[in-house]
Picture 1 (cartoon, rainbow, N blue to C red):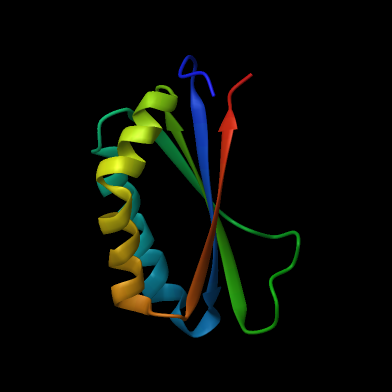
Picture 2: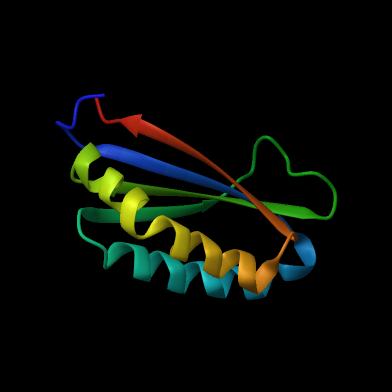
Length: 105
């Protein structure tokens, strides 16, 4: 994949509804930490409305905009394990994350 041009790093989070308030607070801080990393430009967080989350679940989607693929690769190589591990350490298996990488057209 070419390293030129902006990319979106999309993270969709499926969370136990009993954790919603605590998870929202953690996610807000997590996004701030992500934006402090080199190459991250901005982020938008949204609650998923459609498809409707399963009963007892809430879902969020975060779009991180990065300068280019090289910045995203640097994140994967140097920061992803620690950033992902923080959520797992706090919430265990009570949430699930899926990720996509999108090139900005």
